[in-house]
Length: 402
Image 1: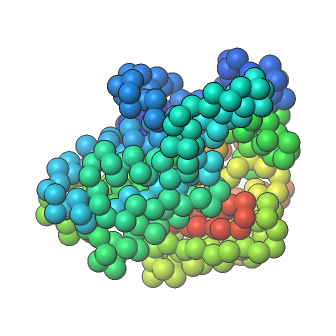
Image 2: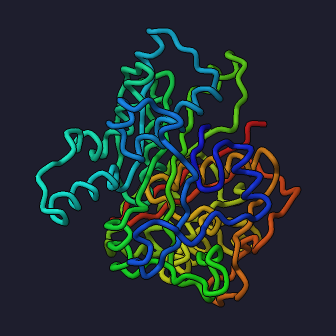
């Protein structure tokens, strides 16, 4: 796995921060912050100039910079020193909700705000959704399938699931799969504010503004970053002698047609059941869940009911973590980060905390591991849920490596 996140830049650092209950959400000090009603977010400490030479940097939107760096780190973690033939059998699968929105925002400011026609010559290359995946393929010479998925909040869960299916089918031998997002720009953030889904900044401490499943939750907090996984068949990884973080065992993908922004209990439950069926698991075999847990009023209560629908009385006995309270909602990249955190939870037998859950909500009455990590929790099988605007719900089933 390779990570570029508000919580840190490698698996050990990110997991240590999450385990200790650190929130990377903060008041933003961007030049345009005064124009925001909710100037909070999960920003990445990052300078592209430290990682890319100027000629290349000019062609990379921030989202592509994140994606390339995360992919490079994942491939290094996987010790993937591939021959030319092996690169022909390697695919790239990336999820992003907003692509190069920063470059597009800059272009519109030049064109409409400054009334100038001097648009950057690489504007199309910077802004296209497919740029992050394309650059990963170019950087490493991967000539297998190169696909971008844009299904809002489930984008990188879909990218991982679709890569997993192609591997299982034998179409490819290895995949880089995950997501990248860089939405912390004025146009994007104002648009999200207009939708009235963004959290009100906590007056006493901005870092506590995202409060999943809490009675005083007021919305989600945007974040940025990237998370990439290297996937390959189990036997191949064992034969190469590399460290295995865990296994993907199932992928549930459904369409919730009730409303474009409000998920339904039935739609979420269907995705959870589809993942169990895909993995050949009974609901009784799930040891923990990484919830979608956005901190919005509608999602969190709906998700609670969906979990009860699928797991019955046992739902109250399953540790459920909502890590967006710590890193924010990375939109198209969130699912991949949460899968990485889920694999690490199983590896270390630690249920990560749902932070800022100080006031119980009667409609959200399950075990959300409130406020502090729970150590010594045996985990063999987990689900990681992603429920999206537009109704593309994706749930991945995960198994510990040992």
